[in-house]
Image 1 (cartoon, rainbow, N blue to C red):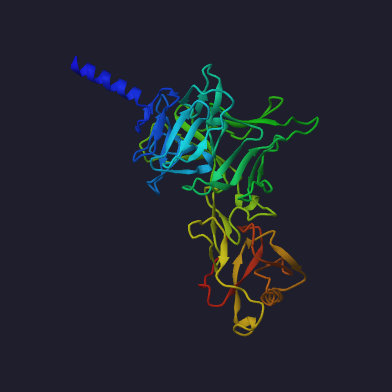
Image 2 (tube, rainbow, N blue to C red):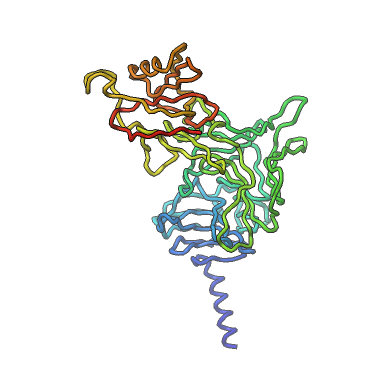
Length: 444
């Protein structure tokens, strides 16, 4: 009897203390309830325990937290939603459910960091659902806000994107700030992937398009991007026709988790993961777009897939890697996908070391190009003429010799750098003598 009373009192205390920092499972969140970022993650768990909403502690900095939703049952705690383009909250920050503003995120000094963009109405409750959707409702159970309508970089089965909605990549696997890639269902019904020229919102030419825009008397425009409960992703047209993006689901949504994400490197991918796992599995890619982002992503007013002066190489998993050519180094050593800078300052006179022949030489790379960086085409020119022209031109950073008589001269910054086995050309990269470690590298 004493044991029963003790457990009853304990349950009542837990019920009356909503701001407790431990996880709270499977109940509605009431106005005034809050979570505090502490040494252990503070979260509200869905009824099945599959998803958690709350403060996710960063592995790289234990004093910083992300307000997020993640898979709670698997060892690889993958994040599927996060607030305010990845703003980080310090320890002792708090998120509280407010009747007028919805969810309110406040840091340890009382500064408001984020609020949920709640519709007009009075919030009565919230809940973390087993679908991975966190919702806010009024007293009549009308929806005032849901994470599914405010996505970050991922969508889940049962989630729909209407026209104008978008997914934005993060900056890196562990940096949740807004990245350079975006998926959007445009107002014309076309689903496109494009790079963004940060910090603006200007979108460059798409490197993937579904082709679901409306054509008079031929087809109706795309209306929604639907990720259904069976794991199929498709564009739904206004006339209810579907354009499938997922061709086959190799793993059922009954036994496997599914998600579709725009990765930090711009590849749009559907993944699956076993719900019953030994703990050593990784997410498996079911399909991805585009097939070759290094070649597909060619822009006229941006850097391309990688940063300026960098080179994009497609890996076996269809994900890109970026690296600097010899004579260049990363502008930000912590961002391997960012811009590269030359390790020297090019001069236009002969007053610093004598003739240019004594100052500069060329690194040769095959099947490498930086399209859209050309400023001059010299033809007919042989390779030696091409070298000499670039060598004596203080604007010339790279010359591409192609087809036996074509010399394309390029100036900094170089954009759209990629390995292209169909290029059939030779890149002559001008480098300062003594600033390069000799290396023979042919991209094949």
